[in-house]
Structures are given as C-alpha cells and as structure tokens.
Length: 472
Ligand code: C2E
Ligand code: SIN
Ligand code: SIN
Ligand code: FE
Ligand code: FE
Image (cartoon, protein in one colour):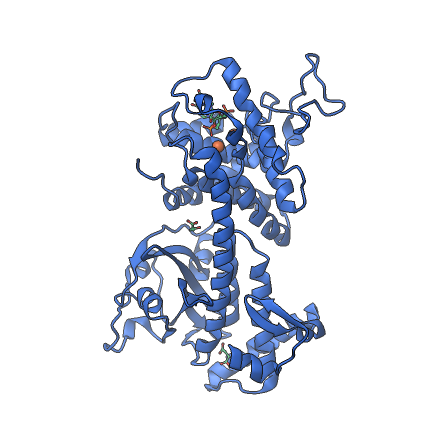
C-alpha cells in the first residue's frame, strides 16, 4: 500500500486523511466533485474492461488516480457504517461493483474457524425477483489448506483462480461444488483475499466470484486485480474490527440487563435486531422509501433494536427471573423498563441515541392503544402536556402515534419471545407463533408491519439459524 500511495499521490505532509486506515491526499478528493467522480467511475469501468479484453494492465497515472479514488470512495462509504451486518453488505457491494463481479461472500473468523457470514449473488437474485432476498445459511469451515477460503486465511495470500473447476492439481486446496449444485449456479473465476488488520491478524476472508465483461460474459480476474483486492481486504478488515468492537460494547451493555435471565441471551437481541432490519427493508420497499434513506436508517436500527430491553437493567431479579406468571403489581414494575431504557439515551446527541431512546420507549405500545407506556416523559415519568388521562396517567399511544421503529421492534420482539424459551414460558410451535402474529395484526401490531414481516419470513427464519440460543 505504501509504495502504491507514494508512487501515485506523491508524499505530502499535510492534507492527509485516514480512510480505512490508509493515508490519502485530501486535496485529491477535494478536487474531484461527486458528479465528476461518478463520471470517472464509468471511464474507469470501460478502461478496466478494455484492459481485460486486451489483456493489458493499466499503468498510466490517470487511471491509477481514478482507481485510488474509487477505493477511497469505498473506504469512506464503509467507514460511515457502524453495524457489522450492514457493513458486510456494504463492503461486498463495493468490492463487487469495482470488479464487476456477479457474486461474492464474506467469511468472518470466529475462534479457530471461518464463519460464512454474508453472501450476494446477482444471478440468483435475478431468479428470485427484486422483492425477495437471497436466503443463506451460516456454516463453519476450518482454517486449513483444504478449502480455498481456509487456505487464504491460513496463508494470508490472495488466491486468483480463473476456473475453479479446472484447478491445476498442484494446489493444496480444492473447490467445494456443493453450493453450485444446490443453487444451480456456475462458479468460474474466483478472487479470494484475506481481510487482514494492521497487526497482521486475519479477521476474515472476502471472496469475489465471476468477474464479467461488458456483455456479461464471465472472465478471469486480471492479475493486477490481485493487488487491488488487497486494499479492499485491508480496509474491510479495519472497518470490521471497529464494527465488532461497537457490537461488543453494545453486548456488554446488554449483558448487564439481560444475561441476568439465563434463558434470554445475547442471541435474542441479535435476532430481534436482525429481524427488525428485514421488516423495515420489506416495509420500505413497499412504501417506495428512497434507497439512501433505507441504507442510513437500517444501520442505526440494527444497533438501536439490540438495546430495546436495556431498561431491564433497572428491574430486580426477583421479578425478572420469576419462573411463573407475574402479579399485577410486578408487571407494573416491569413496564418501567420501557421509559427507563429511553432515559439512558436522554442526552440524545446522535441519530443513534435518538432511535435507541424511541425504540426502548415505544416497543410495548400497541397499535390499538392498549399497550404501555404511552405519552410519557421518560425523565419525569409524567404524562406529556395534553396527554393526561382521567386517572392522571399518560394516555396510550396508538396507530401512527407510535414511531415506526417502535412498531417494527414490537413485532420482531414478540415473534422472538414466543419462539423462544423464557423463565416464565415454553417455546411455542412455529404455526402457533405465526397465527398469533396474524391474529394480532391491527390490534397489537401495525397491519403493514405484519404484512412486511410475512413477506420476508424466509429470510427471518434463516436469521434465526445464524443466532442460535446457546445450550445451557
Ligand atoms: P419478553 O419476554 O422479551 O417478552 C416480550 C413480549 O412478548 C411481551 O411483552 C409480550 O408482548 C410477548 N409475549 C411473551 N410471552 C408471551 C406469551 O406467552 N403470550 C403472549 N400473548 N405474549 C407473549 P410484555 O407482556 O409487555 O412483557 C415484557 C417483559 O416482561 C417480557 O419480555 C418479560 O421479561 C416480562 N414478563 C412478561 N410476562 C411475564 C411473566 O409472566 N413472568 C415473568 N417472569 N416475566 C414476564
Ligand atoms: C487493472 O488491471 O489495473 C484494473 C483492474 C481490473 O482489471 O479490474
Ligand atoms: C453475523 O453478523 O452474521 C456474524 C457476526 C456476529 O455474530 O456478531
Ligand atoms: Fe421489552
Ligand atoms: Fe425483548
């Protein structure tokens, strides 16, 4: 990276900025406006394809600059993202766009294995249609030389294979055709890069599949792609490391509140959060919400939803862990977890604080106005002005008085609570859970949210497999 940066940008001591951990010359970015930049992107694409067709790499300074600019753009883009799931999506989208690749996957290192964590595939996506998401399951592979991803993680090398079905025979790894068989897909060219941080730790592996020319024919990755993909790998590693740290901090916050109930673990909050994002995307698609807004909101939602029950930290174990049904005065105490959670974010500084407060406060309000805590000021615990009921208590919120993200998390939370074991309840059968959600559409839940939920049920079920409850 260093030599590349030196040769392309020259060295300046000022105007440097840190992008994905790389130092770039600020003035370059300032000189190129966004529109100019995207125009150059097209130029670049064409150049890339010409270079592929004619088998030439680029060496001219102009193209090099554009390449660096593109990579920097991708780094900027992924550095805005704070949540891990959303980040993986962004990283892979950017890398695939850069190499005009049909598909790709990301594996994250977890202990001594690689976890298949995220995948995209345009061909399979087209077969599904625009409204459906690809469903994938998580699996683990060992970090050893037997698989391509395992080899790359173990040896920290880029592996560039023109046709995975025509390996030379001298490689230690082999290609596993299982996925192709199941999905009726044909993998040909594959570029696999380690995601390595500055200390040299491998955080995962990114695999880009089936580079295409302008006509959509699958071609091999250029040799010079190998050094470019390293930059993606490195900046992705940095962003992933930061996102994992953010998630760890959130998990630590939650563990104070929720691990006190041994049956309600971090897996629950991850599921509720991931379901919420899916429901939001399905809802937003139907509503025609601009993609930019969805992109921005879902990152914040992913984290805010994880914290929906953080107010339980203030509830005594006597009540929270009670094995049976709660007495009405005990349930009154439980209800306070909504506004006590919101209070933790009272000095709202960011969109994240604001959404986390909103979700904590409103995830138990019900569409028909029978939920809690209603129009309450979380700090004073008094009704908001004009929302005092005859009994002096806050009037309930109903319908769209309940913020969208509260309505979404409500459905995700109940779906998961019913599908799980709790200290006070058994697991419900799937059919019974779905029936309950359907029955409560329009009473407990916003009907549009329930419609959105059912439209992405297959994805929701696959998420559950990614966050299984830990055995006792
Ligand atoms: P939670 O366990 O995360 O449950 C979230 C929500 O899922 C509940 O909100 C409720 O709307 C729904 N839910 C959970 N289990 C059932 C069920 O068996 N039937 C139905 N119809 N809905 C269910 P809710 O009721 O406001 O409760 C909030 C929290 O209060 C619960 O969070 C749990 O921590 C606690 N809680 C509620 N009921 C009991 C209970 O009977 N015993 C104990 N120990 N805790 C309870
Ligand atoms: C290059 O070879 O320099 C451009 C990278 C590509 O072919 O995608
Ligand atoms: C994932 O988001 O799919 C894996 C990362 C995690 O478990 O936090
Ligand atoms: Fe709750
Ligand atoms: Fe919950």
